[in-house]
Length: 250
Image 1 (spheres, one colour):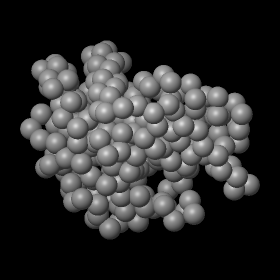
Image 2 (cartoon, one colour):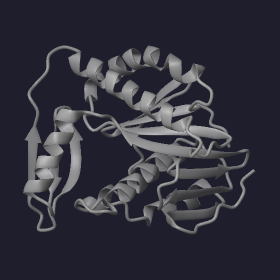
Image 3 (cartoon, rainbow, N blue to C red):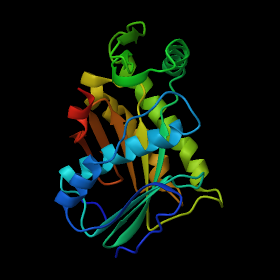
């Protein structure tokens, strides 16, 4: 998937992350690797740190697969402006909006886990659950009831489509700053693992309305476990997350 890439300098003021005029893939990955992307217990700053986590993992994966050009600048905003981040590459300013799939059952379970272990942090999600850790190295997990057949893939596709529709409405608001290119990144809170190809085939037809709208998103990225699904009007792809921080969590 060829991604659009006259970089103009972005102001780092009021940003949670600012990487300016990065000259190469190697420099970008080295800079990202130094960013603390850990997500703390619930607090007022948690959402912005979750966004930084998502942006860094996405940009690292795109860079690792040679889908970006340079010089490049990246800004993750600290306020409530939309979009949440801006990526400047040689031919475009790209706005990046972030969201999660609205899986209520999973989110309710996460909320209960946070209430029981407020010091905890999410380590990983699985097909029907999640594993947590705490500063004293305690770990625990919860699991949702099992599903049969490709039902999880159908539910997943519906939830991702719902997230896209919600953000399309936000994209059309006067307060949303439209850029040369506009991307949407969705974190799937309930990944579907081995059903990912089936889920993608179910999702693509549901996104026809996205490509027909003006304004619209030029690309949609769905992070699902250790994979990132890249979807555009012309093509789709599935990439392994380029996790630069995995050794820091061991």
